[in-house]
Length: 344
Figure (cartoon, rainbow, N blue to C red):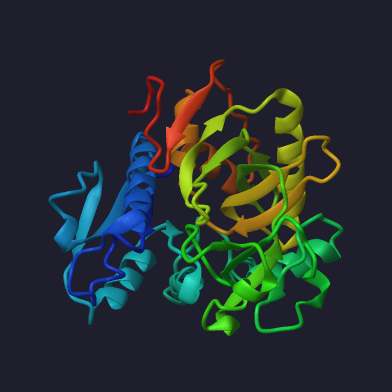
């Protein structure tokens, strides 16, 4: 008989992390955060042995309808203490938060300090994956191909004369925020403050992502998706299409698994962003996201298996497999699909 488990799912943007702001959260981070929260709480709530609890910014209570136990976050002065208390009362805590400003790292650390148990990566893994320069160095040290990534305020001579241009992004960025494309190093250097940014050469290829289910004893890669990114110079995430052709899917998943392991011991949901080249000889890992990614909301619609249940299976040290439906699926940045979705 399965022991009943209480799982705390916390999404920072919608869960009270911005209570100190004068107005309720808006924009892409709220939309994507709400999509991930709704999808994973729904999937966990379908399991007969699981009780799901989440926290919600009281200003969003009428906008977000969730089928789980909800604790309202009403005060910025008590929000963190209440978060820790809920984490301490749960068997597992799944933290969904942006990497910037150490938000994800600090919340994961707070769960452990409160005596809770993370359904996700450990703080040391999060810290390395959250810094794009540290990530690139770890990947290169492990022999994983990745673009040269340098601090914007450092020596950029190794990047000179790249005729494809350059990508500038925050070292700890999330959600394509403050990403920009530049034709020359001179214009790239104008991003301020330069110490907050890193720079990479623009590399041609097909942007893809892979979501992994990880534990100390197992790693399961889900089907790769082709990412849809804005062409206006921001590289904003617009959604994706899956599955890829079989050969490309295999390449992407193998590279993602190797990339995730290069940073240490991955745990929980790990998202890996990749570029696949036309000939397969210049495939690269771009970033490792040490958390659930928005693509979960789309991927779950291409299988009759419960992906949240599969993560629990992996975290409990058991083998997990996912059976995929035989059709193509396109989804937007919030996981809304163009196909009928079993989990809708």
